[in-house]
Every structure is written in structure tokens, then in C-alpha cells.
Length: 249
Image (cartoon, rainbow, N blue to C red; front, side):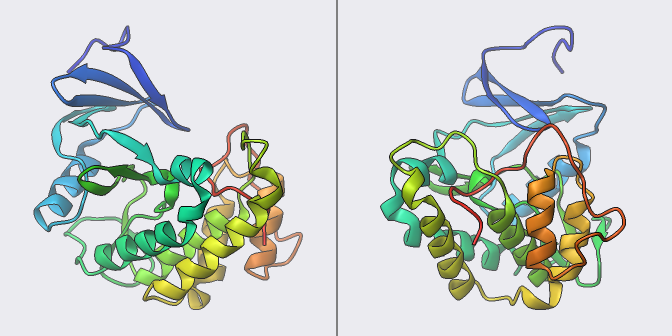
């Protein structure tokens, strides 16, 4: 698809696993930094788009390269950091995106995450919601699975409630913990599915992620009421997952 020996265009974004390059003509290339096939992810995104869910249009997929629609805007997390007074509105939007997704039956072959037959994103938090003039779009479908809707909501809650914070504007730091707690309360009040039956299972799954820092792992165990020294619980790593601003509740 593109020459893997060099960048295909200007680098416009980087995440924990992939880089995003501008290709022109309203397209971007998302390239994973490790051996990975985008075929299943691209197929699911096409399936969701046909079902009316807001995902970027996919043009091509080849190995670790995924060419898709360029979205003009910024992610919900960045918008919260600059306009925190939108916290309640964004919490309701995130809840609506969860509810809308969980109305869609999982296609055949989508990997399972416990029982259930709905499409789960398993990373659907503000950093993976792009706000555009055409409305919000959900990105980064590499963790998508089939399962029960409440497990997806529980994963989002645990990520938002446990993740460390880096790079907040200095003026926002004093209010960040309160804003995080407010966002979580509004999100849980608006979303349809209950997280409580799923917290233990989802926290154990999350704790296996090598990107989870020790401090985040400790919060996860506390939130899910897991033993402090559960074998294999910690998954320290050099990178952190996306997060909401603020201290943990």
C-alpha cells in the first residue's frame, strides 16, 4: 500500500500503538508499529458504517496499514481540557455513543469477550471520540470484540476512573479531580447498561495490559475490589492509556 521504509506523508498524530499520516485528498494512513493485520478491524468498521454508526470511512487495509477518512476536528478529551464547562454535554454524548453501538449485533467471527452478542469497542472513552462539524466519530477499533454491553461500559468507566494524568494546563489542575468525578457521574447516569456486574472481569482483563502503570493498576484493583496483591495483577509499562483529566475518585 505504501513504502514501509519511510513515512508516506506528514505525521499528524501518534498513539500508543500506531502513527497517523496525512495522505491528502481527505485521507489518512494509520500505521501500526508492530506486526499486525488491519483486515478484521477494517471489515468491522465497514460493517458498523453500513449499520449507521459514526466511524471513519475505510478505503483500504493492508497488513499494518489502514487508509481511512480524515476527520477534521479534535478529540473529546482535548476539548474537555480546553473547555471543561462542556463536561456534562460530553458525558451524555459518550453515553449515547455506547448505547447506539450496543444496539448492533456482532458480525460472525468477531472475537468474544465473555458471553453476549453485541459489538463492544473496549476502549470507548473521550480520547477515541473525534468531534467534527458532522458530529462525533468513534476511532481506534483494534480492541473490538463481541460480548455484553455492560462490559464495554465497565471498561470505559475503569479506564476513565483509573488512568494517570499528564500534561494538563496549569489552570485546570486544581479542578481536574472534580471534573473527572462529575464526568463519570453524568456518564453513568446517562448510559443504559449497568457496569457493576462486569467490574471484576473487566478489571482483571485491563490489568493484563502492559501499558497500565503500577499506580493505575492499584486504582483498578480498588475500584473492582480486587485483592491488593492478586497474582499477575500489575501490568507496568512505559506508556499509559488515554485518560480523562483529573485525579482518581
